[in-house]
Length: 44
Image (tube, rainbow, N blue to C red):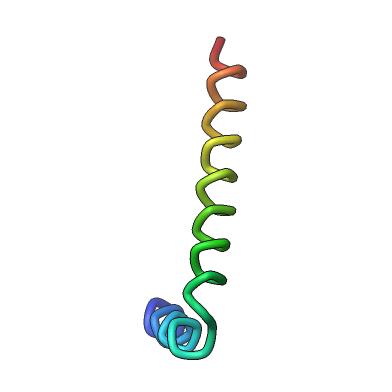
């Protein structure tokens, strides 16, 4: 599983522009922030 993920990541880095990777990373960061904030609301 991890090997397939690393291979797909290598293809992504080679095949897509850096801006695309930055956009994906930014989207993941927003997702994590939303998830953590919603989790805090549930805890409170």
